[in-house]
Image 1 (cartoon, rainbow, N blue to C red):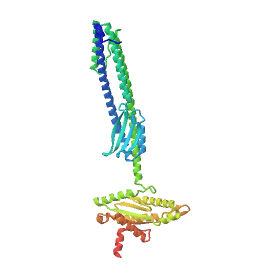
Image 2: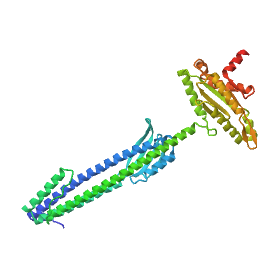
Image 3: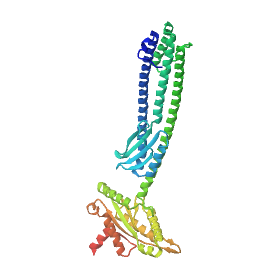
Image 4: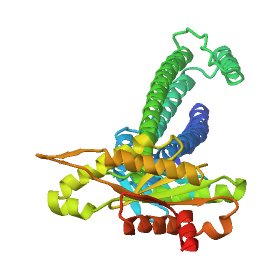
Length: 435
């Protein structure tokens, strides 16, 4: 309905009051709804921020060992798994150099649809990379929009009811229901629960009270449903956390296996040269610090090249495995047996002096000499030569840096003097003095 500029003044007092009340009511309800919607939006965004931060921290911890081990496959699986949920729409892992290791989902730049979180991935105060998670906010924004439209509808409905009631009665009969409604709303405002309006008349105030009570019931029902959803989501999160913990344990086991493989010779199952060099330095340091005695045996298979040339490298590998088994089963529990290259082996003997190590090496030589290795239709015997050097507190200054070289010189002496022999470096020095 359109009005001319002067038509407003032709209204009666009742129409003017009704119009003023309508305008005031609309303005008041609009401002109240706006503030309520803003508070709801802030509350929802705080929940999203808190949840996003918690999920980002947990996922970043779960990724730590995968990033250390450059396990791209496991990182891909984890990111794809978490982006399958409706809550997380995008995940990305960037290493410390800024290179993308893996990503899943779709990044939406619209802040009303997706909220992104950046979480540093740290291990022992060392930043390994950055995790970027995108949480979908469509549901929350839709909820807020729905509240906005409901608020507008509610405002129009309430305004319409009051406008009709104003035409019917601007008299004393409206004071009582207005007072009842006011008192009920005041009690609801100062308490945690919303009270039902005890007005059951058939007029507009009764209708207003009924609508309010129905809305209150709907809100209570909606709150109950929302709580059920929150409980269900919490249950799902706990299940996800349980699964992630299981994956973390599995990744830890895999990392331990990888670590063992990195120090193990794949052919013989003995420790490799890398492990040998690390522990040789450790034992030398212990000798200096505590005065312990440590001996090193270097040995290899005599004429091993002839075995490869005559029977083939496959049988040569069988000979290496057979000799390795003898060494592993005949040494002491504290000794460390390593294959350091080709047919050459090293045995690090802790707290073993000259005599003890020489007896051990000679027993190993005899055990290998008695060994019979079947090569198809042939039975082959092999021998070994060994060189020994011993590091003690008394000879530390002259032997520490040359322990391996002295043992190797003793091995060379055994080779030059007929093979199938054991020589200690100290015996070479004695023989040189005698000669």
